[in-house]
Amino acid sequence: MSAFTTPVTRWLVTPADESAHHSGGHRVGRADLDELREAADDARRWDSKYGGGNWKANSVTACLQERAAPLLQGSFSDRVGRELFSVTGELSRLAGWTAFDMGEHNTAQRHFIQALRLARADGDVQLGCYVLTTMAMQALLRGFAGEAVDMAQGAFARAKGEAVPRVLAFTKLIEARAHAREGNAKAASGALAASESLLEQARDNSGDEPTWIDFYHHARLSADAAEIFRDLKNPKAALAWNQQAAAMPPGAFTRSVGMRLAIVGTAHLQARDLDHGLALGHRSVDILTRVQSSRALDYVREFNVALTPWRRDPTVRDFIQRTRKELSMAA
Image 1: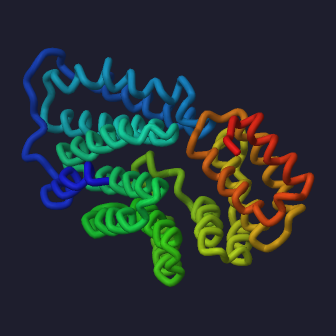
Image 2: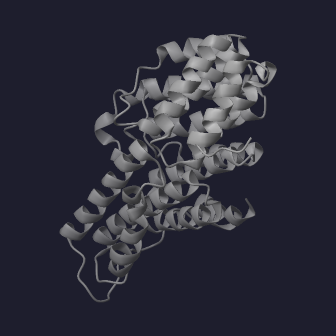
């Protein structure tokens, strides 16, 4: 993750350029900014529903190259320029996220670095915090939990006092997930409690929040807490948190529902409940066959590893064979 070192340090030390004014070709106006925001909103919806490999979610990269990049060379005032940098930064973060979701990590890193640079140009500390938290999540899921903790803590420290509580809460959530991957139950529980406390504060600040953080609420915290305690090999706590997580409509969040079923199924397996766990595993596969996401498949792989004690059971062998056939997963 060394590619992140310089851009992260620059954002932490000097988070804003002096001016966003630029003189060039096309005069950038409100209609241009609205078009880019609409493209970002569309990409978020399609990514959640069908995964980063979906053509609609992937179209964000084309939007960056064909629409946003030329606008950055246009003429705009400081105010319009900062808005342009901000929305282009969010498009870059989304492009990085969709690449990350498909396992294209080098491409994802390039987009995340660009997003952080644009957030710095805009002086948008909240977006920079969110981008750096997303970068921490990539590090975490690639197996660099220690680096993820450092990035999440750095994002929180820099944005504290400037970002709204919901943005800071999400940063603490990812820190908690990273601690859990390291097996540090005390630190994970502390960061999770901090995230929950910040979400409570966010109830009174929703009118001032950026739209890109509206997905993070208590139901999402509860769902991620189930994963945190699954990673800590505490199935009782994982299943208790899952009970607090409101059901998400599969039509809107297909990938998230499929992954959550695999996580909860794994917790049941940790609790030695094969029948319940396997039923959830099958439901996860039912959903994820409609999703293009290598990240989602990692959750099924983790579920399959948890099936190891029952490998000789015919129902388990049938499930493993199903994942090979329908999800093209290796043995």
